[in-house]
Image (cartoon, rainbow, N blue to C red; front, side, top):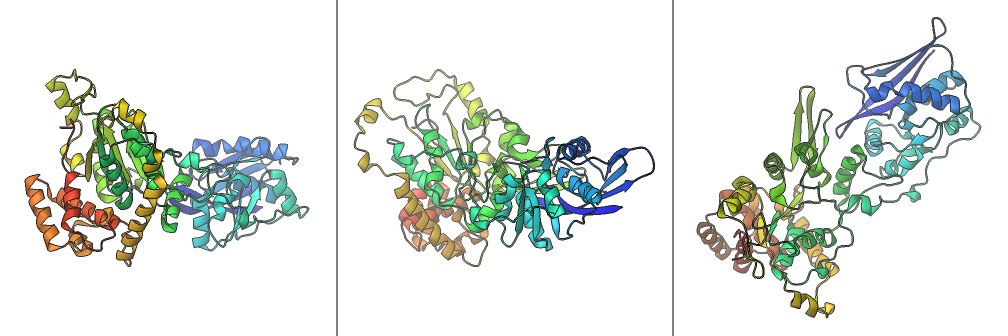
Length: 514
């Protein structure tokens, strides 16, 4: 008797239909084969399926069982086929058909319960596009699937529930859409709880952070240890607007594919903040591997990638950022094919002015030699620096100033700055309506002057500043984009000379505070 159950395979961020075909033969010795290019994890599902069915109170048939995962020419990875295979076998044992409009997806425990499985959001998106409306998934993944509208999601906690459902004893009811909850913010946003109002002094750097949040520009913070670089970077999510609906779908796809959506989580609405350690490998940062998966730059998509101690990252990792910073995506090529992952992130990097960190410090003396300082700075190449729109020096705040800062009512909180940033973003969306541009950093170089409305006086100032600072063509256009963001924060529809003058201040690379 041949039974077919529908499931899906997630390859990168793409999903394809997989037909799980099960055939049982009475003749021959009892055997259990899985074919269709299964990985080791899929092949091991034989033991999980047999044990889970037995522990659910059903005798496993002593027959020759062949399971085919079609199409057979595409490798099958992961443990998500446990549930559809067991559903097909149970259908054959109980002589109860499986509806053809249903998809099954999930990993089994040996006791017959279903475990939280990555990729359910991608499954739901595929099911809607392909015209399937019923999803049978682990109960801890139900909210994740419910974020896709017009889907009937059946939460299954154990195989015993499915058996009773198939027999008609106790039907599994589809989820109530009102139960949807967002993921735990601590799992998604590593910078929760940081307020820019906690940063004392360094108003120039805080202003730069506001511009970054409003326009999505890249920023390099340089200064001695303890100056507040990390606090400024970690306060950025608090002044950035929530994700747009389309952006939230993009981010949720990535986090679902990588298993970063926690149990009972659903749509991600907060901008990601990723802060990998400087010992992170190039593959961990960019993505890839023998089975290509998104890296940190993709997990920071539509959010902030904070690289603390920038110069301590490997040279290969730093240089690998060039293409993603330019294109907003990364393509991983292997002999078996190519996968493209989105990587449209805001880079915020921080570094010390020298190896010891005290070059230019007014209170402590630098112990580094000119050779070691030069070698340290050379790790950040010109092409990478050219792709960073804003270069900001963060000075050490004197202890006396920290002690005197008792009146916190005069210090702007993240909420106050976020209000201005939100208005600036609204101006940008209104200006770029009908295009794929959401913020100023996404403007192409050939469109920057056409879309930014820069006055002739401001253009002259920009041109003279570019000549004075020897800016490259890329830096010239990026400075124009920063000026456009400053004008938006000022509520001006036209970029004026003061806006360009402020933008040019962020192109001087001051590593030593001089």
